[in-house]
Length: 126
Image (tube, rainbow, N blue to C red; front, side):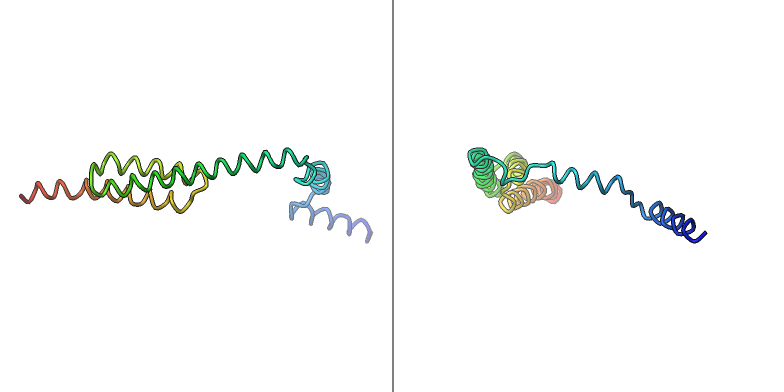
């Protein structure tokens, strides 16, 4: 009777905790089956690194261009240049240039929003 009771308790524990032996075996098998980065030939690793560096350098270049648009939007055409800077900043952010992208989006959106708020106030009070 004690063995049957112990097995029943073990079954209840596994069911309540979400533990399944099948899932554990599947995870172990998939870890053994997957190729580690060191298993790749050196040529493939170098190509992957080159592609990643190209994308990152594209993001940095785009980030600086977006920042130039954002700064220019504070002086001329705030709606056009500000929104363009925000879009380019978002793309730069997604390409890996996080800081430049955030600065460009922030400055561009501030310039556009400020223009949309201040111009109607200027015409309302003059």
